[in-house]
Image (tube, rainbow, N blue to C red; front, side, top):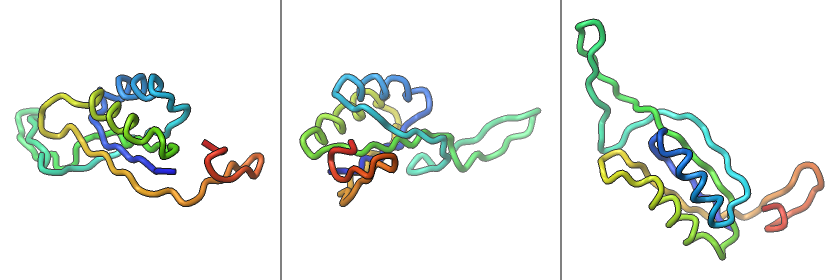
Length: 112
């Protein structure tokens, strides 16, 4: 099993969800987060005053998947979240050693 975390632009959330559903992902968690990378924030104008926005709004998507569909899931995220501009985001894939369904006590890939 793998744990996939993707940081994407907020307006791409629905596109990513639809793409993940199309490749067979049955559940995901999405959180509103703030951060920066190479983009380093941006400058905004408010009531005539210019100020620096260091942390930009992003969406963090977390998904647990079986090893068999990892590449499909990564490709779906990459294609649906891409705008071609700086700040499109990142995808992280790590090993998931154990998963447990709280309600039934099931363990392993049966939980997914």
